[in-house]
Each structure stands twice: as structure tokens, then as C-alpha cells.
Length: 260
Ligand SMILES: O=C(O)CCC(=O)C(=O)O
Image 1 (cartoon, protein in one colour):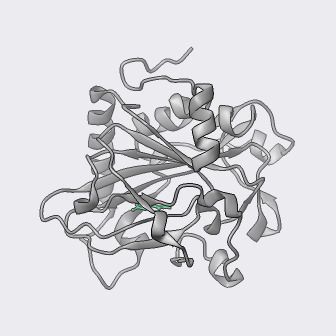
Image 2 (tube, helix red, strand yellow):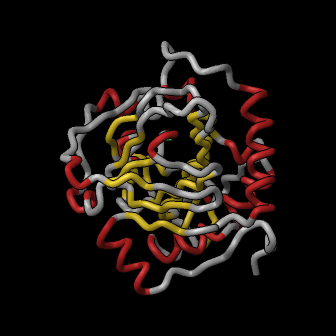
């Protein structure tokens, strides 16, 4: 049984939601965080952010300006949400009964961070096999076109893996990998704080700069993968991440623990 009632809203996907996900490559989940869960995650993530990050500088990279990796090492509530929150069961409904955590990071576009982040697939940054990994972005602020919300191309996951240059993939998360996209059907995904969107590792998405004067756009980025998922760009070694459900053939994944 979940032990974090009061912070997160647990939810199992209906058949209809699963079929929307399969067709569209994404699904919006309303109010996955309760007001108390949202307040705690905001507080803990801002403490981590201010301890490590500097003010936005247009000369710096996306990684430097907008990302804080392994945030579950720095916030107990995020760790609980990542490892035991409602997204784990949802990931198992979509991926397989065997699930591990693959990534946790803050992706914060604070007011004044006007840098866009171009079209890409999350499996372009560190290709995982099988091609079932799931990204979950939880909004910590209301997000809309004015403060750099996410844009998605519905159905774009059906085109499969878009090839990118090998040397860019090796630098996973350090080089921005932008792909050509027919964005005539792109939609802005406006979210309220506490909502989450889940999408397939092949779904094309981007975000524009935060051109608002005073509205932060803070997002918690979590990724889940099949417990046996391997890193294609890394001699097919298993992605290390905590085993959250089911089993894995890899001893190093069974043994993997990540500390706060
Ligand atoms: O934070 C954003 O605006 C985009 C995040 C994103 O697409 C990603 O990290 O893959």
C-alpha cells in the first residue's frame, strides 16, 4: 500500500487512458500532487536549486541554466514521489511489470530564462533499449505559452527513433540535440501546478523560452524504464537505476541503491 497519502494522488490508468496514450504518445494526468505534496516539493527543490545553481546566463548551456540532476538525492519528498508515488504503477501499466527509475532532475525555466529547447525525443538523449521508456513531467507552476510550457506533436512517437549523430549522443544531457520536425500539428500543453504529463520516449517535444517577467516555470522531470533497459550508446550496459517493481536479469541493477 502507498505510504504517502496526503502528498500524492494514486491513480490507475483506465483502458481509455491507455488507448489515448498509445495513439497520441502522451497523456495529461490532472492533480497528481496534492497541495501539500506540491508545497513540499517546491520548498525542497528550491532549497536544492539555490544551493547549487547560479542566475540565468544566456551564454551558458541548457544543462547549466535549467537542469539540476539527481534531484532525488537532495529532496526526500521527490525521492518518495519518484520511487513510491503514483507514477510507478502508471509506468508498470505502460512499460512492463518490471520497472526501474532511469532519471530524476529539475528542469527549471525561471522567469527571465528566455532560452528555448528545440524539438527532440527523450530517447535521443541517451538511447535506451527496449524503446518503451516513459518520461513524466510534473508541473510545479501553472505553465502556458507565456512562461515556456511544453509543446508536443501528437502521434509523433509512431515514427520511431530519429537518428542523431553518435558523438552528440555520447555527451548525453550536455549537448542539445535538436531534430527536424513537422510541427504543423504541434500543441502547447498548458498545465496547472500539480499536474503531470507522461510521454513515450519517441514523442517529439520542445519548449520555448520563458518570456514572462515574473512567472517561473518549474518542472520535475522523472523517467522510468523497463528494469532490463540498456544504454545503446554505452556498449549496451544496463542503465543503473533503482529497481522499483518486478525483477531484472542484471545483478548490477539488483544491487543498485541511490543514497540521499
Ligand atoms: O524543460 C523543458 O522545457 C523541456 C524539458 C524536456 O523536454 C526534456 O528535458 O526532455
